Length: 335
Image (cartoon, rainbow, N blue to C red):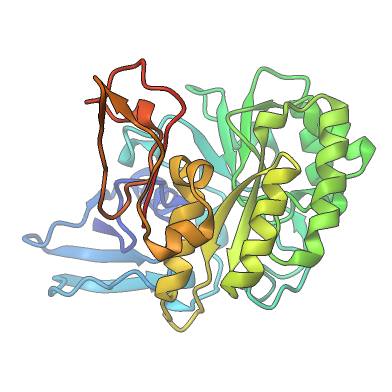
């Protein structure tokens, strides 16, 4: 068979695990597998879509059979067991050098904005870290939705803490489950970048503060503490985000999208832009950024005061190449 693959969300960034498994499964059967080419005909084309807001392919797909799947299609079925058990084919993403997988599936929570309980159900083991690890890489990105809620997940974390493997739990860790003992397990891990938490409501702030304290006491560097911040009501999110920064946790704002393809409001987008562009977040208040008021704080350039105007002009002076490195302590603020 000839098999075409389509990652509807785009295939130049983070790899699509389902398509990698399907590719490996079909190649093992002797089938020819490639990214879909609109000028060719295929026996079968798989279309995988993670996000509801990703636009579908709008051209004719020449194939004997087209199979769609993924959360973006509101299709919550698992892959067939024989495909799910197949190791991913990383060759279709040649520039991606890390392993990807799930230690666990499911979640114990029932957050109203989250699809995981409906899609994956109760928490359960999925794989060991050795089964996920690539032979050509020591780095693993785990996609678990609540790994700390599973005894299996905690066992895998404990074992990885004694190995030369670098990890990232990119869906965030459940701060309500971080105890001094759990924090000690997490502190033994080698982190690719951040220890990611989630702070989606103001009620979570005391929990985040306590879990961050446990992690620091266990030896996790303050610079690694990071939290997703869901943005629904912008004013409420604005109370949450500075509080996270005050407690030494780096926030990352995520504007809310519903599962019917609804788009964030312009204010939600603007707020996320302010938070996630760290040069603006450090230099401007939200009120300054929202008003779009350009503020000049004594920028010296050979005796001149220069103004930087325009959208996005909230930068530390040291980031502006045309100014000398001797420029001191100055910023520009603008929408």
